[in-house]
Amino acid sequence: MSTSLAKFGYLPAGMELFPASDQDQFEYIKRVIDRSDYYVVITAGRYGSVASDGLSFTEKECDYAMSQGIPVLAFLHKEPGSLPANRCEKDEAGRTSLI
Image (cartoon, rainbow, N blue to C red; front, side):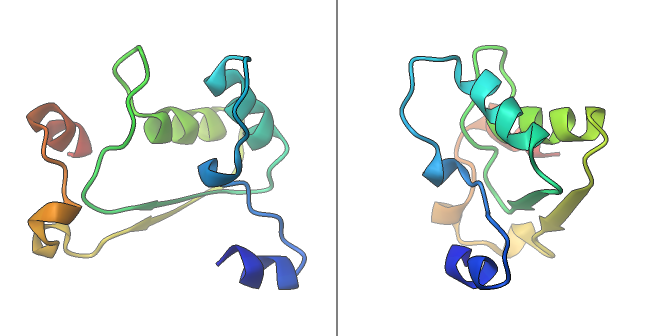
């Protein structure tokens, strides 16, 4: 998808592109979000990596983008209950956090 977006002049900044760094991870993410025109999130059956405060980085990113007035485009799975078990959150706390 990144290649398709780049063809139209967009530069996606997904976590898979973030470098390993000594700086605080969320501070780096916030700087990337601050330079973004939109925050796009695609969710399904997993809560994601959890930060030390117990929130997923995805939830923290989305909250931060909204607090900065950055438009959020959220794509949610229409029927997350239909996802195969190996594609869903296994941890009870993670499942609860998805609600």
